[in-house]
Figure: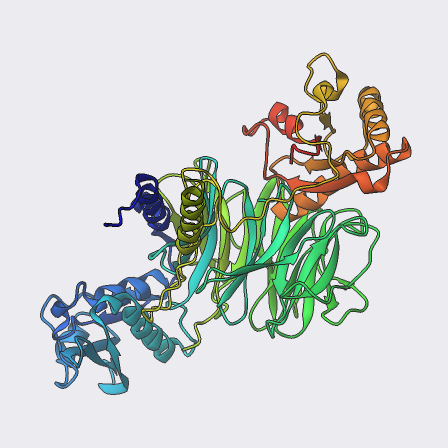
Length: 427
Length: 185
């Protein structure tokens, strides 16, 4: 007797395969729309032996550094420069580069490759450091991002964010997808697809889980979703609405907004949904909590008549008002060092990402768009990712915290919204 | 024959479960891709991981034809609000009364009230504003004697607009509270 797979089962397999593949038109394309004033000229030579890889790692490194808006890539041509031979500094200086990276890709065991590279100060002709890593050929992208992170940190003194990921919601027709992509928009993968809206994704501090609000039960419910396994659990599904999840810095608790006792108010709850506690009480709306690394919870409240930003200690206590200019300030996100805050302010009918220095109380509008939403900081605090609109479609954009460097991420069709920049990967 | 069909159904459920949770074990740091939407996985449209709530006390789907009869006020389910307002306008009082009367005379029937806003501003703040609209409808029904246990007010914020243009007429259509009965949500 032979076992035959019935047609409907084969159809099931096909449907699975279709559902799991992300279509090429859903790929985020990145475009640089503004750069820093004084970009540092750097050269990334082609690495010796990298043509054995599906794509050159140095293409990824150059694109990363260029996109940061801090560096200007100096072209050296196609001839490779290995990690072992000292580079021709005269030639590199004549092209105008202040720093140069050279490297070698060599076969290692089990079909893998070893990448060695070295970074030089081209003016002083001294080595700034070297690194070696082992990769499988299809990891050229991950490897390129790690090399770019190394170079970025050596030259700026701050960690790079090229190996981080972003989460966002793609709406195409009546389909919503929660997607995860590399910070450069590549490798988009769907973590959740639904016919009902998905909003407010929030990364756990270790980058393994996302909390978000899904309307699949015809009402807003907060879920926690493990990305590597696809397992998820309900974190808040009380009577009424459940929304606006934010992780505590230790990743154990979530601040959430519930209406189980009346108006929208902030509570904390364990990530598994147990141990709900009320954080604060007000006569108005309290929503959009966001935990800072120094223990404050920033949030939006209309207790004073218009939506403004307040903060309260994460353990509870008296709320303090933080924003004073204007009549609509919402969606606060503290910077990773806790020294500044981004939020969306309404300025004469335009909704714009605004930066507040918490010590000096100075504010700066960072964008020139008019429908900005959902800002979030890169883990090094250098860039702010947000959603905005262009030509009637939802796109993502990023702006440096000094307002100079600008990027746009969009898909060919569909709306992209609700971005959240993930934490540094823990290797 | 019957047993074969049950066996096949079980296989299908198993396959769908396998389809929707596929951990990647190749050492990549990428997120495992999964799909739990009810529209993607199977020809039958059933998601193996979804538990559909069934209310044993509810009246069921089509027990009350008056809820769908265009001539009955009970077929009208939307209350529109003014800009930045959470007050039910006088013109909706008779509609609210009709629904209150139906609910008080059918104590096993439940209602989900969904509040909505226009698209301007923060999604989460709009979710909180939509809740105020849903709560206003719920309060009006409660004052007319509907039991608390029959009512749930929730917000869809700006996420489910009935009209999607950026114009005042469209925005006003989106500032609304919708009443859904058991079996409709």
